[in-house]
Image (cartoon, rainbow, N blue to C red):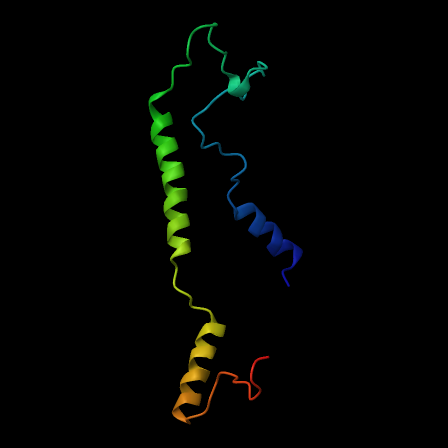
Length: 110
């Protein structure tokens, strides 16, 4: 364990990172007052349509296209579960020993 004198020297030698300010901003933090509008955007006057920004269509296509692609990929994902592998392995071993792995009733259906 460190003695109190060596602990003081370690503390004195450590750089004071809290005193340095690396950010390029100065002054008080900026705060946007709540306006009461959804996303801070005023609705257009009656009879006019909202003008979309350039990035909005790209975002919608990318977001929903990615979700559709992920849905298709998950639907067609190969089954790699341990249960499926074990079932196939058990069937292969039973066929190699010439055993039946399906139950066949000895009674005729009524």
